[in-house]
Image (tube, rainbow over all chains, first blue to last red; front, side):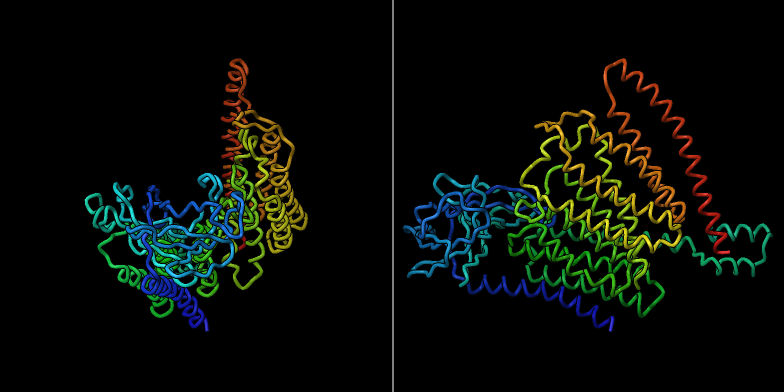
Length: 182
Length: 395
């Protein structure tokens, strides 16, 4: 009986690992891909190592794009839906509208689910939105890239987004930062 | 009494080989080498877990993510499997097996970190520790392993520490007053240890009690530092019910569990439970007591510090007496060590002008020297009593 229970506990632990892997892999494979502009900052996580903190152009959503209207002092952690569409010819997605209620995407739009960040992080007249795309874990010593950073993210139907690839001046992050790797 | 002592007595010709074996069997003495092996095994397990965590942090791009995940899972399940085999099937290296299972549990946290790193998952740090805690919660009881239980308590403490420092947490308690929460958590561990004595898992009681007593004194001790807690503790964003709730739980647990302490007389049970309840109350009071607030560290020794110094001193004396009755060397040594530290705090806290400080130095120095000798004599005497009582009881 004890051994069966032990196997059950270990199976649950392994199931969490595998379940998370399957969910994330599925999102990366079938999710719709968007290209985003970003800027880096480089801290370190005690368990997961060096990472680049990414601040996106779409992170600050002007309040005038919200329907129904909201105020800038939205409490941190409030659920927010943001619709994105490609702007111009460079392929980058930008915010077209936002709401605290679930949005139905119009043609050419992708809806991202996020949550409001702390108000002191917002640009004037905007709400700072976090999409779960703000941390990008990198090889040791490569957390300080120079050049234009772009992010390719996959988005599933629920609006959850995951980073698929990060580019530095058009090269993949790992390639571009290889000389800096320890 | 060690096996080597009995060997020496045998070699000197005072006892026969048969008597030696009888003594060793009667007192259940073990080879010291075995204990050393246990320590080495656990240090090894901790080093492997830390090494793997660092390798994960290094995040080598050249290894495909599938290989990383497979390696993480194989290592975790392999450590558990090998540990189980050594303990249950082979049976001769049970402690090494326990160390391997300990490693397996530590690697579950490494796997959580690995998945979070590979998929760049954004989440609250305490959630990762909570997941780890939930994952290993059943293992101490299933494996009947003290090491797993110690890891479980450590995981709980780490989760608690991270959680109270998260601004969006229900139990947010982030500034220096968080030491009060840790001290009360220690008191809860102590109470849990008392309660565990009357369960099918009495082996776990010393682990919880020792960790609890150490946590309580370690985190209550800063209250004796001049100026500690006198700035910005009146932060309105801090959770107001956390300390009373922890104190209430601790009082209930210790009061309910003190009856399980076999060495204490009825009078001492009341005294010990009362002391622990008083400490819980005073730890709460240290936070809620009206106090002159500063926006900077003023460093002046005030009423809270004075009460803390006196309380810690009296509590340690009571702990030593309780330790003596319970025949716990740990409680006695801990009490003596913190009396020494308490005196050091009071000494530095009462610094004043050059003349006063000079006089304080001389008086305190002489006092420390004399009191140090007295404490050491007292400690040796108490330890001697414990040893004698244990031997008499066993005989």
